[in-house]
Image (cartoon, rainbow, N blue to C red; front, side):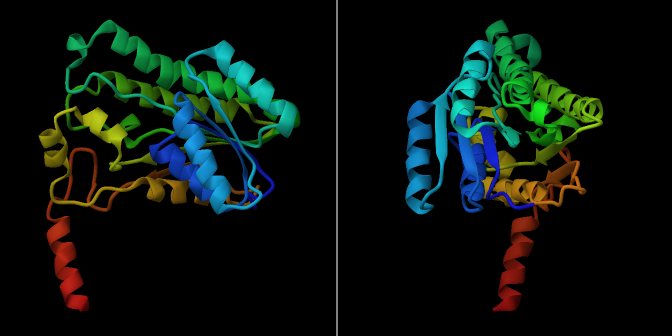
Length: 274
């Protein structure tokens, strides 16, 4: 499917995976609607994209997905200019409080994470289906950026709320896909593994030595790797759905097992090719 004629709404678009997906889809000529909490970062990204892609249409709104009323208003305002949303990329997410275990979290940290990762996730979907006219038109794509942690227990503490919210996203994706039978709306899950972003630093904890130790011996993904996977899923013919796709570093055999000799073997392979 060509993305050139598609209008794509991306939540959490100001940095990391969201910004990388925006850059990747801009190269396809898609019309972009970018939502995030940081208006300054969104505007900077929009200016970058317009400079590098002549004629590209980019709309930005600083909005928190936890705020249903504000999110609804933002979509209604955009719809007046673009008519409808073809693709929703549910990417906004939070991980705070690590490395504290669940009983040591502040209750506000729990509320904030579930408010974004569960409520905000569902609010964005609900609003795009309704105010964004996806349900009315009976076609479109909802691409949910979940996580491999939605299926496997992560190897470090402080993950109870994040892990549970990602499992909820997986369940929501599967149920929504079933409920939308009789439409041409695809509902897909993209599950990144370990990605070298500021977001992952927050998940592991704010201790840099802990982060560096976790990354030792292997090469994590970078945000453009995940963006390429998203573009692949979205580019399929209408009759084909890549329902779920795990994109992980090769060294990430599972969330509990990492091949920490990957880098050394990779260096050996480089030497052999020289």
